[in-house]
Length: 304
Image (cartoon, rainbow, N blue to C red; front, side, top):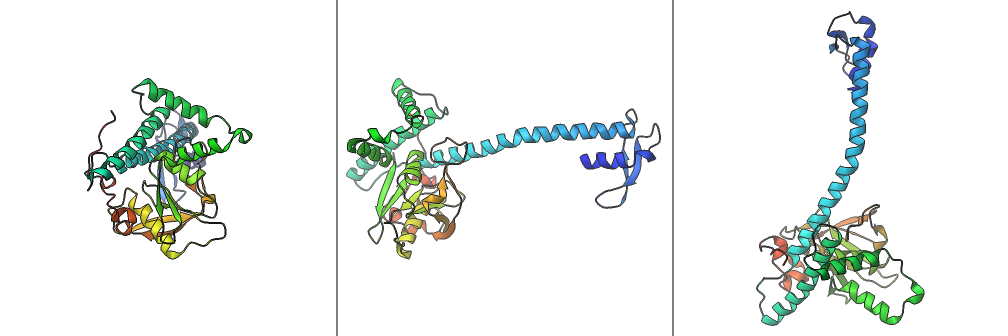
């Protein structure tokens, strides 16, 4: 639009009064072109009107683009929450009654955390006073700076237990611990609180999935076998676990951080990454029979 206005302004001297066009040349192709003119405004008036409209469109775009970016982030977050719900094994038949009972108890705890998370994010109304109070308590904790001098061993242990409540734990071939988030809270704990710079962070590329961290001692180098173990876990605990081969990003946790302006749980961005192939069906989770919802082959019940 601005380019058309430039052309009309450039050829305004050729304009004849009461004409609804002015002849000139296309600025991009160099070919002869007839430019439309509002004969009530004349060539210069038409150009000025086009400039004004172009400025208005730019202002609109400047206002809309941030909203679109925010919508994209919100969509990504909700897709992750949906994945977290599908990861739950509630209602899935297990091979033994004991494993079913244990799995159901863990998943009920995770489900409650997801409900509180959604209430806190104003995406779900609290069904009872307890949920509302728990959501307010989470907000209070998130807005209060930790006073390190007041921490004691019991508080530290309690804090660690809270962080681990949404985290699966596995043992790699070398004996190293691998942490895997079960929900948004668990993902944030794995990525931002439980990991150290010497660890290795994993996440499936381009799809919702669990945050996975291979724990290491300072100066240690992860073996290929341990790296593949963790990558396979990240591939399995993702929305694309039904693919035979999955691209998995990995990096140091020091390259993982919260995006600026984003307060949603579990949302992170990475500044540096490498990529390897993860094979969901080779993962310890697949071998242990942790199947069902994430594939989308089991219906997710509504919240009670």
